[in-house]
Length: 484
Image (tube, rainbow, N blue to C red):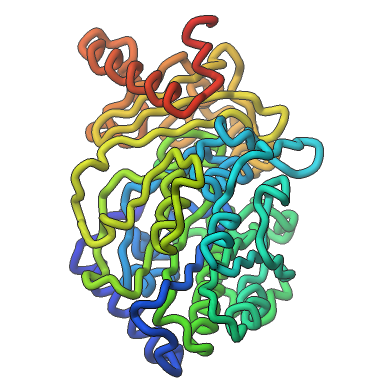
């Protein structure tokens, strides 16, 4: 197995190469578009199910993501950024409200019969930005409701599996002759599972949106299964490698879309006054990541490029989460945060600090994915220790339909394997009430310390932290401490 570690020297070398690729490809600004004192344009890019495991600047030497690497070279790469719930709709509601989903009402999926929606009194980020004098537009995956809460000025139409097409469809909105700064919410459907199976391959992997005819403007980057890096939470099997190769191809398509969007900003002279943020809604769509609050599900890429930033190409180890995004973006915009009930806080002040103080604890809250997948979990995560409270621990852990059908998981069941990655199948399906991990000595979260008397004090302290978090964020599930 190839290592995912990367030295600071190699990271800087890759970032410089990425930036050079920007400059060498002709994607340079035609003109300086705005006075330095003008409020910045803001672009928030959200990919779908892109894990920390598949980005070059985060240490994967196989995946080709030159545009994301170049963006990191111009800004800051957060190494401890977390979604608060590893599920599409719920996570996006947190991103756009600055509130945990147990507080904004978007407990799970919005679409079809799942029918979860946010409370009507919520004041979301696009609404706050409109009030602050921004023009707002969205393109691609939306997946939250109702529209009155998540109201954008413009909803652009494009194929969300074709991020280059998405970028081109944004050109007129970005280039509009309008004195107001812009906020663009750019959401790809890649690298989510979908598109059927590759029947021509013996492992029959999911396509992850890849198709034989490709997509206009995309130069498909294909990977050999033997070359991919199997992260420790997954089994190193032919089925898994075949699916990871498809996943990598989809990620590289996202990267090309990012490059195209940046080139559009440069073509119209707005790149020099635009804050660009890249995140994923949750971890990769494999059992053990997406829908779980284990590290592969919630620890994700977060790259922020502020044009006014003086220290570039740095890594910041602050523990931030997606409830912090809306207040951070509003901070950039100069909007009034007192109009919203943010439960996160702006991390704008730490963008140029590698080891900031006061950012050492974060929280997570998951309740549903699909309507049939009730499994509430609450998490407090410090630098060293992590506590997961499985509120409905008497239930078997529920599977998302696409993860259950994945050839990687089905092959594990078919062979009767005891282990799935480093965790046993039994431990994955049946979980205890509390899971306490020492992340420094057990980064893969295998050795549960919750019943170890040596850690009783740590367990007690973190339970109290969790209760205080639930009280502060008005979590209805706080009653489960008393009733169950």
